[in-house]
Image (cartoon, rainbow, N blue to C red; front, side, top):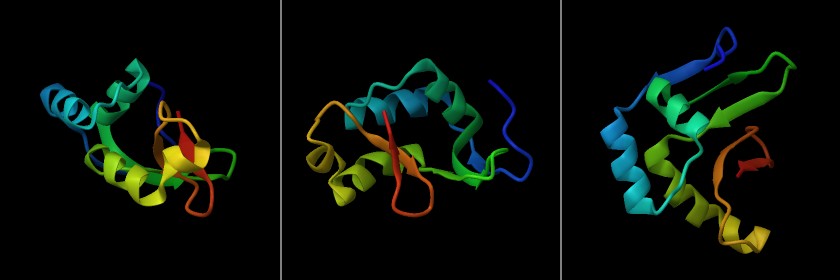
Length: 94
């Protein structure tokens, strides 16, 4: 995994079995890079090298936040899910 920028505020990472359990309960399929990230940091936030702010939601909160923000409805696609934001009106999704 690439190093995160200096000043990244992270939450302690999760064990693989915790990640697997959460993904199964929420019916999420995460790319390998995401699995690696959540093992290192269960969400977090900070400024990227380009000055943009990034907030990655905790894995166990992703399903609820997607429901609360109605992401699949607004994007008109049941196959996408949000995983963070820029701290403002922009949601990051895959």
